[in-house]
Structure formats: C-alpha cells, structure tokens
Length: 136
Image 1 (spheres, rainbow, N blue to C red):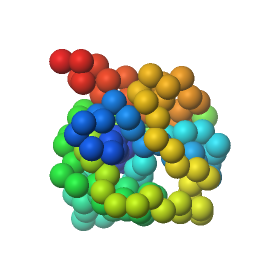
Image 2 (image 1 turned 180 degrees about the vertical axis):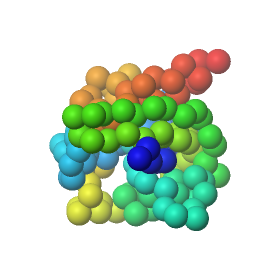
Image 3 (image 1 turned 120 degrees about the horizontal axis):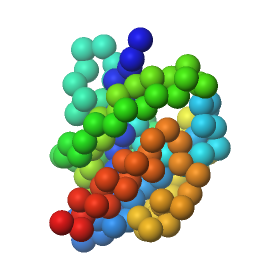
Image 4 (image 1 turned 90 degrees about the vertical axis):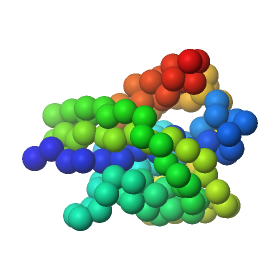
C-alpha cells in the first residue's frame, strides 16, 4: 500500500534560503546517501505535525511554520517502497543534535552543492523544485 511521507527543506534563516540541511541515512533503503529530514506520517497525524516531529527527531531542530512546497511520487519497486512525499520548507531553530540510530551525519549545503550529492529517494527532484521556486 502507498504510504504518505514528509520531507523538510530546512534553511538557517530567511536570509540564507539557498543553504539547506541534509542528513546522511544510517538505515536502509538508501543507507549512506544524503536526504532531506523526514519520514512517515503517523496515524491521525497531520502532514504539518509529522514534518515538525520528524525534523525534531532527526536533527533536534524546531521546524517553525513549515510551508507546503509540492507533492512528489516516490516509487522504488527494487526496495518495495511506494510513497507520496509531501515537501515543506522553512527555518530550523535551535542546535543540531545527531540522532545516530537514523542519521550518520548532518550538514548544511549550498543548493548548488546539494544537487551534486548522492541523494536518497526523489530528494534531488524536491531540491530542484525548491531551487526553481527561489528564482521566482
């Protein structure tokens, strides 16, 4: 069955919207690849609640006032994975805390560097869509 997931494009502040936070996955699928913080929406949880929770769980940051960006289909039969990812963007507040059970590494990247990294799921498409929106 198709799952609903969330992905967060986190920026340090409104003046640095072209710098985003990525995490390196410590779990399959896509273990060792970079991705946007996020995950599955829990039962009876809104997408906004899920993205705020996932950001806190994976990075320790408070994801204030997430803004909906777009939805993205993520279909990977080779991993038995099918989801619709709801992407949000906004600022991260607080100090980064590495959650080693899920995440190997956390780092800030300029958008032009982020799109060159080995990215999990369809996160390249999400980041490119966000970058295009910044140009308008």
